[in-house]
Image (cartoon, rainbow over all chains, first blue to last red; front, side, top):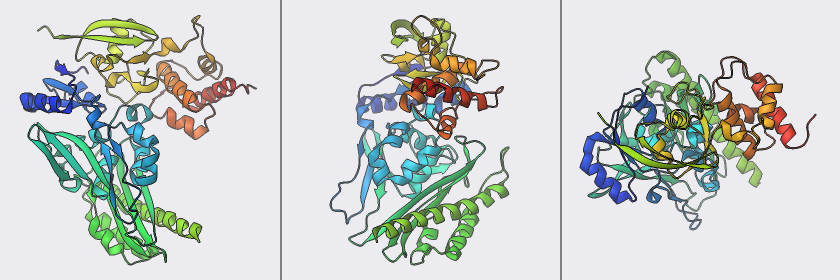
Length: 307
Length: 163
């Protein structure tokens, strides 16, 4: 349970990190928090010849909420790839503008791992049950990747290819994630957010996770909804078509039940030691219904409070 | 083969420690095998059990999930650094003894480090907050209830409301 030998570099700038990646190619791995990579190296599932430590790069630490004005327009919440999960968990801006991510973080590992693990590290690791990756897909976030030739933007929904396989090239570094923030486009709307999962113990890998974000008009009618499932397919599963079918409904029990059934039908879970595929499909239906009800309830309670 | 060595300078329990380490030396192995601070325990070595928890710049982390080179220039506090200056147990350690918060003792250093960090941030935690704080630490003896009791007892004493 000891890593194979490797060489270590701690570049001072992002440019230098990209140059090191270009020089060493697939023999090198970036390390930030290391909460997934170090166990893989201990089990020798990964044995890079070089580790390039990007945990101290200030270029990867940006946190920027969209400007308060104009409140009418949707914006983006920018999170640097190297921002630690514990920082976002406590970040007031995130709770105010990006509640879905802030709430998902409560399910990510444990205190000790969130103190080291980063937002970007969880995404590039590509675990099918990763909560942060699911939120990025559900909200249709944009990932900015950098290499020595410049920056590339990739939608999170196209980034994940298979379990632990993403479209990032060996010489690329994830720099930041831009999460869309919903605004009302000038109309009076309220929002609700919910994240939930079932795991053997809190903090363990989720058997299945689900999240939803809904926008209701002043009359309580759904303007838009996004939802998705983690651990229920080879990649985090955003379900925009099912969300689109909820628009115009009152998120009544029947609409939610139909959406949950459609989500379970869209899932493609695996059986493993912890749960059968059938059980995971069952959880997918239950959890999607649960998060849609919870997100609706939050938005409705805001409408009531405003009266 | 001879591995390349890297210089590190790490403040451990208030003392600056300098050494030459191989890149793959984990922080827990550095603490135990290089500095002989064997209070921090090695359990699963892949980030599941929490026995190796230490404070890094005051925050609890798993010392098996980082390499010593990554701790260069930073401040580490181990279980040895949590006792009173004269070496006797502090209020939290006393509470673990009194409330029978340990049996075999293997998980105890990690439990106490996690509990210490909790009480520093939240002096009067609720039961569910205590359970969440030690959620990343496995104990195979106690069933956890006495550990929760011990942390509650320490919280009461630290905030001056001891029974």
